[in-house]
Each structure stands twice: as C-alpha cells, then as structure tokens.
Length: 431
Image (cartoon, rainbow, N blue to C red; front, side):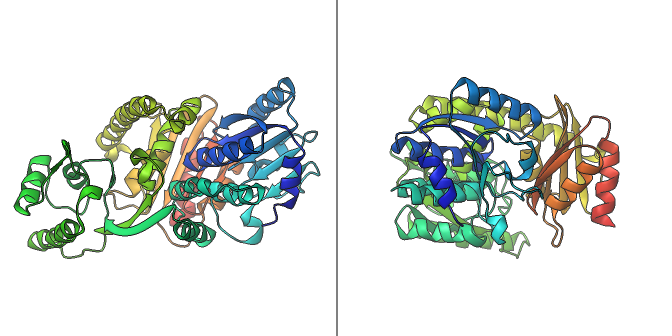
C-alpha cells in the first residue's frame, strides 16, 4: 500500500480531526493514530461514529469548522461512502471496507487494502501508516487486537502483522484450551462455560480439578488458566479428552485454540482476545471518551463498564433464548427479529454469540430498532456467500444501505420493511 500521499497530508497539517468506527477495530485504529500523531506534536480531536451518514457528515463538518482543523482522517470507515464525504476539505481515509464504486474526489487520499485485493483490518492499515510516520512499534499491539476483533488475525496481511508482533517481542502465541478469559478469569469459571467441557456448574468443575491435584489458589486468588504450570495444562487437556470420551463425546477438535498474549501490556490487557471484547464493550455502550481514559490507566472505568455490559448482554441473551422458537427461521438462517427488545449497538454481538454457540444454523441475522430505522447485523459460517455484497444489495433495494465483510456485514433499512428484508435475504441464501 502506498502511504506517500497520506503522509504528506498529515505532515502538512497541525490540527487534525480523527473520525473512527465504534467497534474494536475502529477504537484500536483511533488509539494507534492518536498516539502516533501526538508524538508528531499534532493537535487532534477524536470523534467516534457508528456509521457514516449525511447526519454524521454534517456533525463532522461543523466540528471541523468550529475547531479550525486542517485535515480529517477517517479510520476503519469512509471508503464505502465516498460520495457523502465533504468535497472542500482535506481528507485521508485509512479503511479496509469495500470502497463505493465512484471516482475518488481530488481532495481525498484513500489507502485501502481492498484496492490491491488484500485483507487487512483497519487497525492494521493504521499501524502500517504510523510505522512510516515514525517509530511506533509499541502500537502494533492494537493492530493485533483490532484483527482479533474483526476475526481476521490469521487471514492475509493480518497474519503478517501478527508475525511481525511476534518477531519484535510484543506478542506471544501459544496453544491452549478454547476458553474465554485465559488470563483474568478463574479457571473453574472459564471451564464451566466452555462448550467442549461435559461437566456443568462450578462445583463439578472444582471437584474435577481437585481430583487432578491442581491447586486452585495462588497468592490469595483463584488461578486462571494462564497461572497453571505447563504440566498442569497438559494434564488438564488430557483429562478433559478422557472425560469427553467417557461421556461418548469423541471428537476433540474444538477443545484447543491459539492464545495471544501481549507481552508488554498490563495483566488486564494481556489476553488479546479478552482485550478485544473490552474495546467492544466500551463501543457498544457508547463510552467513547471513557475507553481512552481506561487506556491511560483509569481501571475503575473498566470495572464499571464490565459490570454494565455483562448485565445488559446477559439480559439480551436470556430474552433471545426464551424467544428462539418465535423467530423466523429457514433451513440455514436464524432471524433474531428483536424490534426494541435488544439495543441496536448489541444486536451484532448477540448474533455473533449465537452463531458460535449451540444453534445449528449457518447464518444468523439480527434486526433491532434504531432511532432512524432498523439496524441489521449478519453473521455467516456458510462457505461461498458474501454477506457484504448481499446485504448491501438488498438494503439498497429497500432504500437503505449496508456492507462490511464476507462473513459479517451490517446495514440499515426503514422500519416496516423488516419482513421484506427477511423474505429477500432468505431467497438469496436458501435459493
């Protein structure tokens, strides 16, 4: 990717308005750019947006004029809405979403791996950019986390960034159990929630661990998986496989996964997967200023947000489980028609959890009411379909808009057009 034009625009600007997406990848992009630009003595302001719309562009233009900014950088968004962006302001786009098929205005420098048929998350694009701006090796942590947030860490150029992080000692990748919370969550809690583990409840898991002579307590706290010795980890893995076999569950393929440890981060942020969910929780709760306060060391905010996010997410999941039989379904698709029962910011998270859980559908679609329409979030495990193209086309046909990636895409349509979307989407996927 050629960053020369973008570098020139940045070097010639002293006051920069940074507009970034509200998900993990977008927040990581904003962190990378803001830290690097501050090193260059640039005056910056960060604006986080859920999407690009005419209303958002009006807000951006107003802030640009009021703040006497000289440049706008759009990170992890912008390419899909080139025709909406201002024509009279200097703009740099560092994005990885499929660009709108229009001629790029002369005031815009766009850097996007899609233009070279490559895949790289937004934070990865931003990291490569700041690598040419100055010495910013430590910011590769956020490129790794952004790629995990977008489920791309081992895909194409993201894998190269991951390998670079390993080479310079910022990342350690190791095999381990496929659980969530390797570093910061008690081992008995993570095991009791694991899909591959046949025992239920904390007491059964604790008893299982005690029979393996795995001491749960260390320095006054319950151990996490990360705290176990290598021998304990090996013993635990072997005994889990034995337990599955005794319960007639012989396929061990989903037991193991890669663990990504950020070696220079504080313990709260060492587990890159867990770190990505922290970013997402702040974004979904629209705690945009607070996320940067947390990154500057305010851990009290992290505790508060975790509690609020966990409470809301548990409530929405419980509602979805109770109403599962009422949702429209086809052979391959589950439509979570939530209306106003699930926050629009969290419908995508619900879709992701369900498709990676116990349901037998290959595609999950979430629909939730927003102030200006219906928010759509789609997730797929079906080979050969491109949700970015499908969602974009159907939403456009219904007077809305959308896009994203092959396996995950979002959109927005008018209220009252949900049934039409469901019908069109169903025909597209099931034929």
